Length: 172
Image 1: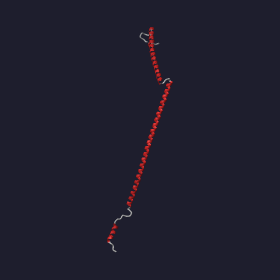
Image 2: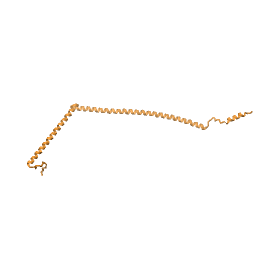
Image 3: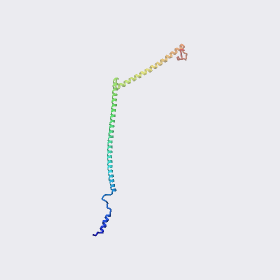
Image 4: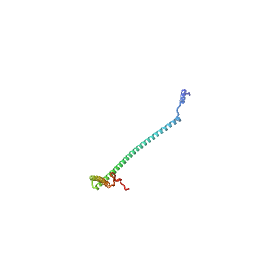
């Protein structure tokens, strides 16, 4: 049997070709494994970040709602406090007005009667003051007259010199 030389050369050429093996090299397998592991980690990290973002957004919404609720409660509490203070002031004002009107009634007059009574008291005080001023003026004139009479009597009796005064007298 004669072999075909050409055919043998072809077979030899095919055998000389580098045919990749059935299993890839370890370096390629390690690189692909690292790549797959890295891709899985990145995917997990993305999922965690999205979950954290969602949780933060939920917490922010809850905090915003709580803040709005606290503001509304503070406003309502402020309104209640103002209402209470205004109510108490109005009550004190009414009680004071009632007590004042009761006092006016006991004193014998209403708002017009009280004013007339005060005016009458002022007129009486003014009259008393005028009378007191007049009385003091009369007393001063009388004191001057008595002093003048005493001085004249002392001069006549020789107790005083012509230009002396009663203040210069002494009992020494």
